[in-house]
Image (cartoon, rainbow, N blue to C red; front, side):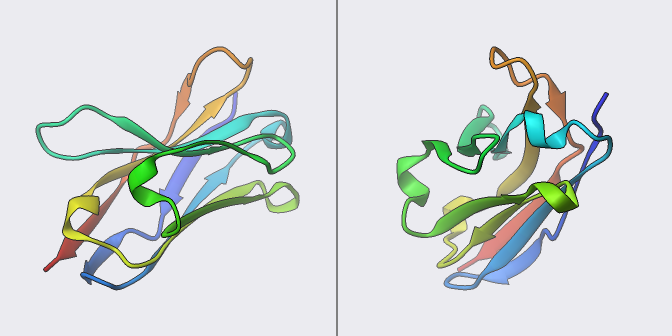
Length: 118
């Protein structure tokens, strides 16, 4: 079973950048679709960006297009989320997740807090 650990969260001012990482244990990382989700206080968790096993983009939230970039390095068992031009509304706990069988996001990390101040 793959285990996921996020890192790279923190506090930044609006307009700033952060890079999140999701490190996966195990040797099956490259066979999973992966995704970044976020959950703001009082709101439902939403899919931000997801990426195919080979690196192609699966889904993207409209509000982050042209600002956020998802990528993965299968050799390092790591996925990334580069976040630029951050806005206060991007404030949330960010989670990485794996979709092992193509039907559900069933493996989750513990989350990392991102806070953007105006």
